[in-house]
Image 1 (cartoon, rainbow, N blue to C red):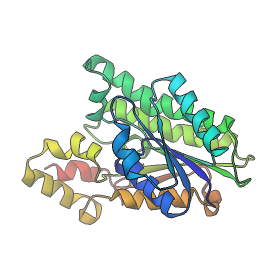
Image 2 (cartoon, rainbow, N blue to C red):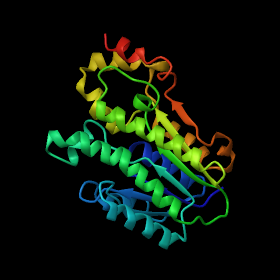
Image 3 (cartoon, helix red, strand yellow):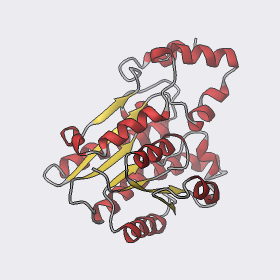
Image 4 (spheres, rainbow, N blue to C red):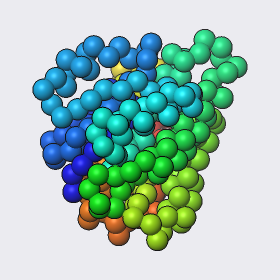
Length: 262
């Protein structure tokens, strides 16, 4: 199946890899950027001539979310897949507020409430193909699958909320032509993970940390994108409701994080 996919936070990292993969697979992709934080011009240039459109989206704003979904639906005739990738972490949330006391609330608003609101707006829209529509939520192994000492409480809470949302929506939509999934990546080679974790380490500590991760390496964004593309395909229906541990084993052995820090 191909159709119209809306990928939030498609400017970089896992989201950018998902956009690239869906375009490769023949989808028309609407991707979002955060106005005032992610300038649109580089993205417009990067996707010029491709089946992609760019839309502003601030997950803190109901008006912005409504305008984004309405604009995508109007321009493309509907939306067949929603990939809720946009999120902030312990380092990147600073771009949204200078007040440290507000950062937990902003993180929960963007990661959890924003994802919920986008799901509701997607469900109220129409598809274009007649096939089952898809919701793919991006959670995290931290919160979505396991608990890790030292992991941000608000970050873990928000990712846990996304995993719960996925299961709850799947239960409610079990007889509807909509499939819902969550992907819980582990340590992935993205700017967000570098800022929150790797950049805080000395080079030798960073090398030891990565070597101690499952398979001795970071996950590549393209690997998560391959999984997301499959979940957007007709073959994924059997996994309706699945919260997928995509951590290469970190979710079943969370102690590795503590082990690799010593």
